[in-house]
Image 1 (tube, rainbow over the protein chains, first blue to last red):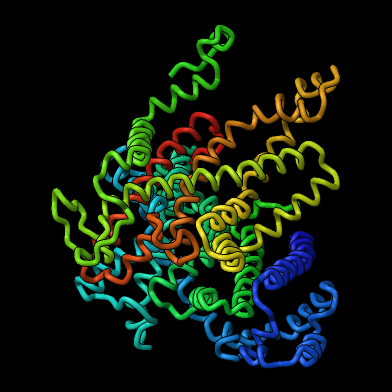
Image 2: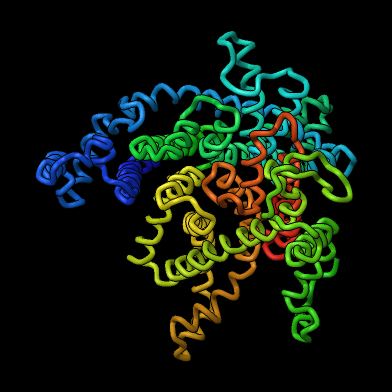
Length: 315
Length: 293
């Protein structure tokens, strides 16, 4: 177990290095002159010698590997450059947006689990009935819809027609205000995953229901509900946890679109705004932060598995 | 259900492919999916004969009209273009995007996966570390950033989506090849002096085809979804192209008063993707029982 974690941590470093290399290369491939980006239209009025001097000072004439090492050095100090539009440090902009994205992702996960797992269990128990078919139909819809479109439809119904929920923003700061603001973006972000987890819970539950220990539990006269939850669900959830964990990080990617739909002030929206304004330092910063978070969550999840199911060994 | 016997294989009546096909056709949902897809494809191909309108002809005086049968069944968009016509022409773009992205991703992924699994060693290490790095990025974030940098357009979006999603095929095929290359018939081919290329192409890859087909089918569905998302952000099809995701992007401005503009393209995407998923589910059950969910 400890050696497994150590091994994963050792792989982490080259991986993070590779991520930084990819973002660096992306930034390098971006069209436009970095000097222009920094000084704006003043560049046109500058003399060639002065321009060359600035390029030299900024290190733009150095070979690519040297430039990369400098970028890496800055990164390690938490310096990701400055935003071309606000001139604030990119790291600060991202740090101020990060909590909103985290809040949305966690809320989405909770909504998803609250809906998907009971639906999956009901489907399995009522296998072949109308309820089962309805749940499975709903799950299939979930994986087949563009999530952002589902979000727009929810917005149409609950904000524009009924006026129950706010269509955009993070709420008024009160607890209920925040919950209300989270409902639609949270559900929308988790739509696809909801479908997947419902289907998975059902098939996993069906497998468990046929096990001998379930029959034993029933035979010794335990209450059916107790058997279902304590003997059935607990075992059925192991494979579900694997998938949920692996997919948790992928919710992050979805925030890029969902935050745009609901004007949610997180890093997904920051990235999209940066893209539409060709604000390269911010684009690179957000890509980097997304990827590093993604990798770290995946690592954490893998380690947690060993705690959920002691049968899992990564030797 | 009767399992195919050795005799039925040998007689040719029940080749594994035919057996799989029969199983797919026995699945009601798959048949429904296939029928819907066939209709969509026919409508997309026959678009000019089906609708009297031009998807690009603007008529500002007739902008944002509510549904008005029989002239404009779904009404018009903000530039006075018939919504249903654009939806029909949009099927051409969206379905093609799905196929092209999978075509790109599948070719790169199968080729690299096969090379990686067959040769092993340093080549395998290099390819698989590359796969690991690409897996370290959230799919959509990477795709959006790259498209933003090389310039948003339909073509660039397809290329980027293909180049980002080949990793799934590579991992899948590599795993298959790793076990297949130890098979007796592969050794036999090697002994009689078949070249590596020949062994890969005619002895190993045909046996991976099942899982690749299943993955590719679901790949078309997810590519259509991803492409619609990118177009919705303005990273894919550019105006005036009639594409479902781009139509949703345009519909956002008039959501309150003309919701039909947003409802219709989303429904079209959903129906297309769901039909493909129906077929995919059945194909998976028929071709790759291990993956059954």
